[in-house]
Amino acid sequence: MCIIQKQDWVVVCSICEGDHPDQPDDGPISPYNRDGSLIAWHQEQTDVMTGHRRRVDGADERWKHYSVNDIKFDPTSTSFVSSGGDKKVRSWQIEPDSNEYVQDRVINFQHKYTHVPHALAFKPGTRKLAVAEKKIHVYEDYDNSLAHTAFSVVTNAQEHTVGDMLWGCHSTDGLIFASSEPDDVDCFEGFHRAIDVETRKCYELDSNEAGDSIALTNDGDLLVHTSRGPGGKHPLRLYDVRRKDWRAIKTVHMEGFQRNIRGEVNSIAISPDGIYIALGRIDNRVHVYDARMPAKGVLYEFEHTGNNLTSPGRPLCGVVRVQWAETEFSRLTLVSGGMDGCVRLWDPLQAITSPTNGVILAQANSDIGDFALGDCTRKEQQLVVGDCSGEVYMFNGSRTYIRPL
Image (tube, rainbow, N blue to C red; front, side, top):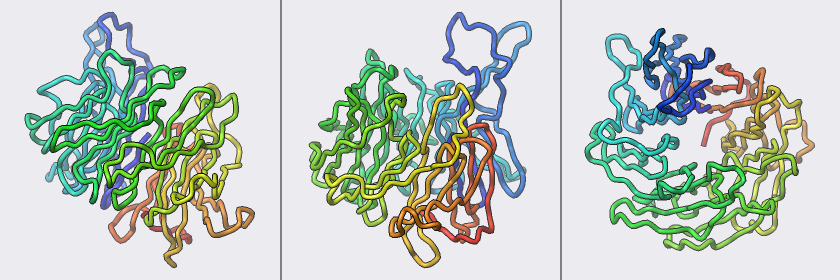
């Protein structure tokens, strides 16, 4: 699940039951395969958008609906793009007469992706779009798919997908950082690249384990990368990308996970000053490191200790997102969503036993799928939460004022 918001628009995407990859000998469509994997909300109105779907020939001529893997707003407008299990990236814009989102175009109509696209990223402040599958596809303007360049991260023969991707900024403007993860969970190999879009050069980072997550400081100087290696090792690496140094300047091994849990870091958030690195882990914990001295180990540990609300038979997700925020007194805080169905607020300057630490901002009926903090001065919702049962909640008027950073 992914939730984004801009002005007074909220867009939510999610997985879709029975949307297995298309095969020539596809069997019947699952009776649970339905629309609803892409939804927009505006001024109390909900719109289910039908785009990532395909009409299946047969006696009943049903539609097959696909999961929507990622969504991103165009930085220059309220239009947005979506990537789906139908191997399409689609753009959506607001139709002036109805004030509703309508599909504008299929961005990759001129070429086919070899794999299902996942991560999407706009270059900050522009309409330049990067799409990740096995390759990174860069569109100078997503309205013109002919101005398109593809960069290889893994070969077609390698069973990997680009799991995380982001644009550089400031000192690393024009670079794209990409990290691959294997399709096989028992594989611990990964490919991690820095791509210079202008010179079309591709540089290898010195990590070779299966990728988890990547994040960049606000000034674009420091790249943080987590990965999953054999023997229960989970390296945390820091790269001085401002100097184009593709060898980690600092490497530490994160605390291990329980044996019955496949260790993974779902989310990385770096504080605006570049000092604190927060990791949202699959074991329902948040670990915070000091970027200046990561070898000293975990600086703070926050845990979602409530009951596990994950439905029986579903995989554990843990802490799916971490995000830095500030209170009305400009105090730095951290927000996380976990398997206890809660979005919680943490204050690193308070003792973990303090009753004000881990305060619940929102509570859902199932484990958290995603959340999005908003800025009320920009007409956004204070907090939008989606749980793994498919419910989406809007929270406004909270006595605890927080602003996303």
